[in-house]
Image (cartoon, rainbow, N blue to C red; front, side):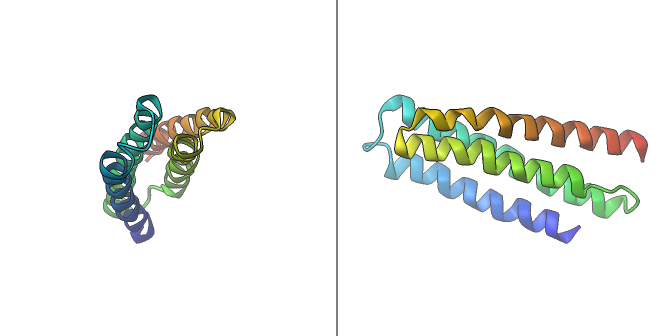
Length: 121
């Protein structure tokens, strides 16, 4: 399960970079509502990076638990939810917001899959 912890750690670093870039690099370049969109993406990015580290740690401590599925769902959520918000904030293309809920569903699936695996294991 080292790949899950590594993916969480890399995404944690990327979330910090995104947050700092939003606070310092984009503050004067984006309209306040687009900056808020960027920050929402960075916040959810960090939450789910931490969740990935947790999933990896649980998987390492409880080897019978198969947690690749929840980890992939959380990664997909980061890509689709936070990624679409980042691109929306930078481009202003509102139709990209249609992708964001799909990422949100991936987050929900990841969390519920983790709960299922924990109860089943």
